[in-house]
Length: 373
Image 1: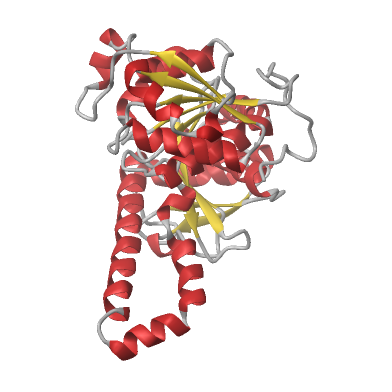
Image 2: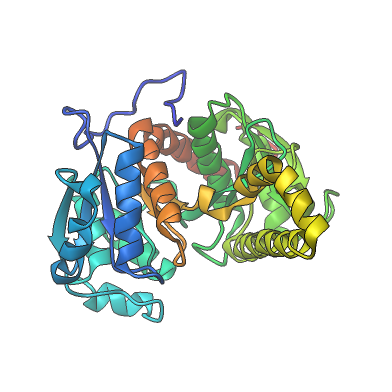
């Protein structure tokens, strides 16, 4: 469960739905590769899983009403918000920002901005979603570039590590990587109750002399701000450390993080396909599969990308969860579940406070100064 940070109560923004105990999630119905039917089915699964969740579903009512009517679990738990336009995967963010106000994506973020929803979920175009979210919600103070954080199955003490950025921006300066560290730590702490998460900076090696200039500068900044961010900095980590028990939060730029994420997802699917082929290759293999069915089911669940579907936009004045475009109903439900947990956690207040402190001390000290923050 997502929990508020132990040393500080909820940071204090008014939370829509909190008085009634309802958790209202604003969902873009039209952006996914599988169409609105997968989104509606995911909404139904999510409300069955969490009796406190209600849905604001944005999209074309003519398309959505028959789909919603077939899901009895959604009766009294879902409100349709009509929006005729659709952001496609091929639309440029700049075009959506200028001409996309009639789209389901824009409508879903507007509900978050005006306080109707507590968090927003979309399976749509990542670049457009980030652009619309930045335009409507604005960045937190101390954040130059927002980041997308993902959960990564790991050998760690909580079963998952967090990595960011995984695709919001291909570039990142030293100060951006420091902000990512603080945002990722706050997210992980609220997600898993870890009082002092371990942070690693992704590099081509663990030796201090390796890496680009901005990586070396970020190494110094992140090291100096351990007390500001309340984390333990373990130094440089390599790609093989991403699923390890050495670290809780992996910090990198969006280009590197996205390549790593897609490689990991592809590898998980490859292993799953190879395992299935091997276990159906003959009578003895099939008998072995039957005998090992329980263990194989647990393994499949552990590496199933749908179980951790949902990248969280960090650094904005609102909680936005980006679901995979190809997500099925299980994946959509997982993204809505994550959004609901984050909506209750109050994580953004503490994150904002630490980002302001870190930004100020980083500017005052400069990346080359050895003063402690």
